[in-house]
Image (cartoon, rainbow, N blue to C red):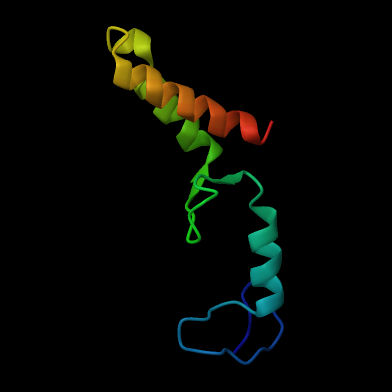
Length: 85
């Protein structure tokens, strides 16, 4: 099989593998804009910076009459955004 990223031949480990291991690792490392949102969760989840900012706008306390829930969620989103900056 030929990798569509680097155009080198590679042998896929399974049917689902579409790019070579070298390109996969390089692509994975390049996604520094993703955050691990649950440090204690072994599976973790990755959320892109843009999505975090959009979520913060949607749940901002000014839009929800300063409800306790909107304040807590906004605070947590701010912490996640601050981790990488």
